[in-house]
Amino acid sequence: MIKPILLGLFFGFSLYYVGANNFHNILDMLRLRNMTLGKIIFFAIGFAAFLTGLTAELGLLNIDHFSVKPMHLGVILGGLIFGIGFGMIGRCPGTCPAAIGSGDLRDAVIAFIGGLFGAFLFSISYKNLDNLGIFQKMDFGKISLFQISNKYDSIFHLGHSGLILMGIIFMILAYLIPMEIRK
Image (cartoon, rainbow, N blue to C red; front, top):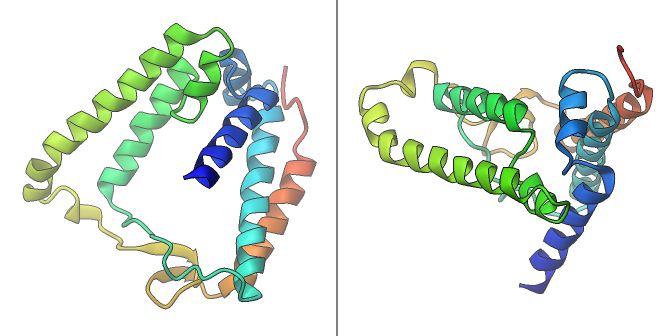
């Protein structure tokens, strides 16, 4: 239990440190005014992909147990709802605790309650929507970008080296993205 708590504290501190808890920083990123947070996000995704691919390739990490969720209409609709809410309030579940420490308690609590409410609505409606066949209409199954395990289909069959390559590309993009795209 100590390791997840320490990692969570580190993650929260990191969000606070880079300004991801600040509503205006998030809106500036979404409006393409200041890409500092976008650069950090791109670099973090790239670094995580690089480390995951490298440690898996070296045999230090077994990623066969990683769970790939099915891609279907519910995932796409949920992502759209999440994205709209994220853009409206400038918060996601990860930034809510960091926002509490910066004096944005009211907005953080509203975002947290909204997330719980959305999850509750989805959970009580899931069976009915599933029975209607809505999720099967666009069910692509469990797809991953690279063939990192024999358990899932993939778009590219590059394996662990694909993760390493993607990680490097994302880190380079993070470096190349200008801080300000437009004024």
